[in-house]
Image (cartoon, rainbow, N blue to C red):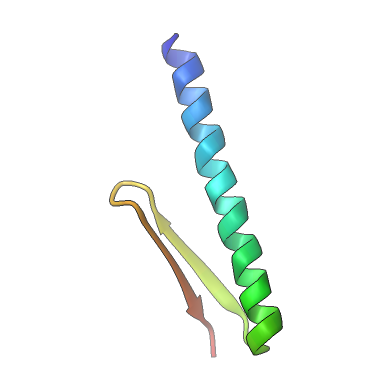
Length: 52
């Protein structure tokens, strides 16, 4: 049971990572500037930062 729960949590974390990277790509396309993704799951924090 614990292994299944851990696998589900890992899959959800990976999905968040993918979605954040997609958003960063969309921001880059819109603003013509690359973006960096920073995620901290411990505090529930997602940040996109333009890299100029």
